[in-house]
Length: 261
Ligand code: CAA
Image (spheres, rainbow, N blue to C red):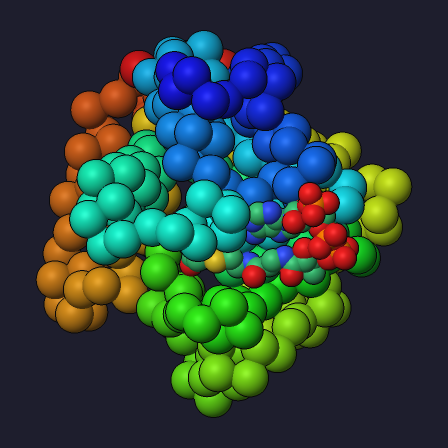
């Protein structure tokens, strides 16, 4: 663990079959310092490797999901410092998580915070959530996928406005543009996100992982290759006990008891 990170800045806890990782750096609105990112990614990877965990949940606080990269840490940085920081590798590790990852977003999701939400597979937002890529206001631009994931999610002209003019989206706008799955009252933001993660955690774990992989690749492959890839993953699941159990349970009109094997 990075010496600069107190244990409390990132809190990891199990809620049944959901591995919850919570950012807890209120004095900096959960700014993603190198140390916080390392702890966050490591905690998610530990849950990703835990057979008892079937879904991951990433949450901030009510006031801020994350206000972006830690500007105070970046201010004096050189390109070499940035390369040596390993920060981009950490974003790559997030992308390689196998289990479904739900984001519970309340308050600010700006810069790297918005990029972090977009790295997740599903996003539950509170009414107070605000999404934006304000890097242009501090002399830079998004550097953790903002120009790419945002454009894929909301389309070119709105992405341009957010990246070039610093336009922020309210939770309702984010819902309308397809950046989040649902908007819930502020007091319910965490519970609703946990409920979604719990729903996913009850499904067949291997099927969920392979389905996540296929959906994640949908925009990166040409259709023919993607359909072929999907078909192979589909066939692969017929080697699992959960496929036999799921279909047998359907026939016997009972609830399936999945084991993740
Ligand atoms: N980095 C470091 N510290 C931050 C921070 C950040 N990204 N965002 C907020 N903080 C700190 C503030 O410095 C302040 O600390 P002090 O009291 O010690 O000064 C504390 O959090 C509270 O912030 P504010 O007083 O500014 O709170 P506010 O309610 O007035 O404003 C805000 C909230 C609009 C989110 C404002 O803090 C803000 O604009 N933050 C920066 C947002 C930003 O530019 N993010 C992009 C960062 S670059 C990036 O993310 C690159 C990338 O692509 C990876």
